[in-house]
Length: 356
Image (tube, rainbow, N blue to C red; front, side, top):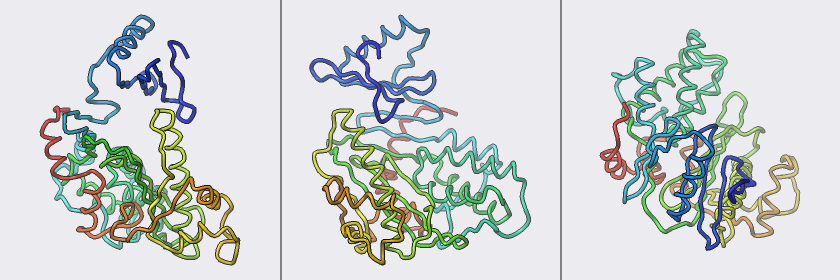
């Protein structure tokens, strides 16, 4: 790379320059758009001059809008949301005046691909679900519910449309939501992983979820149906641990590139003692010999102490939101733990620019 820049080995859209005294300039590239940050003002000035000499470009200043994401930066922290995009979705699909609701999915609801009721317009349904999927970029509270309706893209019946409209009603009541990252010196990476068991009542497959936080706000989250049928709750959570471990290893490599190498083993919180014991037992026996080999790599990570599995109580399981629909109290409690604190949101939104 020119001018002393090096492309990150683990994320090719990330480019880093390290100065002689440890100064750092970080550049994120998306097609023809750039985001950059630094800990040395001189490096920013030099970078701006070099870029304007070689390319025809405009400096937009402090980032406040990028690819539909709205960013508010203040002394208290950084707030990221998609308020305008959420409002546009409600307007486009004629739900701007709908009655709001407190959760995106009814507790204990089990959607099936077959569904019920007559078929709905497939183009309309797919456009609606596709629009919601992009909104999950800043809305972890929508990830599970949007993931569930996404599994019904090929069948699209009235029961599926009703589930999607419930999500829109929830968005109507929380259109300003996003993630608020308060100023903090706590750079300890926190990780939680969870799974339901056989939640898909047709294929009997489970849903894995994990969440990573740095300081008070989460920055990486995941919810996905497992590829195999788990024979027990412990097995389902063991597979979820493996998913979480792969992301944890990648994040550690990324942090090392950014000169924030984690000094301690990766601590993953799980609320199932049997799943933790399964990862520590290197002997293949009746409970594990049928599990796909790709999930067993976590045993080597535990043995080498790169990964430490820690038990947490179910009520403290932050990843619970990504594996099942919850009752209102539990759902709102987890939203606050995810950095979607209502007080922080109100303060941040009050200082936002108007993007409408």
